[in-house]
Length: 348
Ligand code: ADP
Image 1 (cartoon, rainbow, N blue to C red):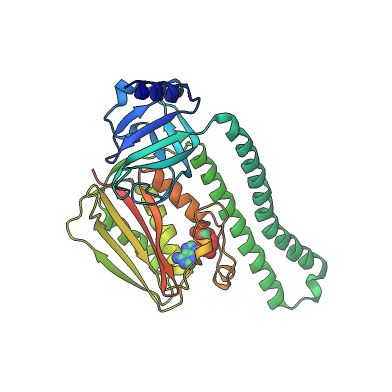
Image 2: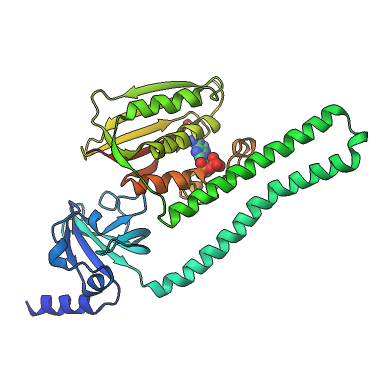
């Protein structure tokens, strides 16, 4: 009894906000620092789903994984309606004698002062990566434009056309890059407005595939849709943007005349979510790169990526959009026979 009191007091003295949830994701405990930061008193949120207070921006389900003290990013929803993005450490609560029995999860939110340094470094890295990404197409545009100005008369008409074509393609790439960057900035600053409503998934997949079908070369779409699926809760334009990115990647990173399978089903273990998976027959993604692909500007260095155009922001945007719609995305499988990207969205 005294031991429990001492423990509870000690946890309240810790300056880091702490929250514990049970195996169903219901809030069971918060400490004093959590109350001070969020404004939520434990009595107001006890027994409620954790999503009222925070959202982990990651595809790792700790209750299903064997990861200990895993560092992730999370959004914390304060009582006054404002949000904070923080680093968190998550740890699964397990039964002493029965390690396979998961009792819940403890989340520790990290002190802000440590994150200021992290943020400064992230921001410096971001500026330097963006500058590099912008400089590459600009150098090419400048070089070809100078050649055309200086030596236009000496160049064959076919070369002039080719140089102009390269300038146009690089300018298109720059436009895409700037559009993606502006979108990322709105996402990161939580300035993106989503209209979440009930949507019939099949209608949106059909629409995206109809447009992408024109750019799919000889690739074949195979549909494996579960009948009578309930509607998903999502923003219609953003859902199509996600499908466009994932199916677009399946086209870009797979050989001509291969097949791309799009499967939908109600999640077996958690019937409140629909799973959508996209499987291609591409060369797969190496084990060491699998963690990287959802981060900003991650274009893998392989012949397929070099041949295709892209900004390396598609999967980062996809992941952020899915998280904002209270879903999850992950790389289900990737080997030399192909890759499967899956994502889950809530049903009503
Ligand atoms: P982009 O396609 O613009 O380069 P993404 O963020 O969509 O950016 O993807 C990041 C990287 O992940 C790609 O450059 C590619 O190397 C790799 N990738 C994505 N999807 C696939 C896939 N289906 N098969 C193989 N590699 C992929």
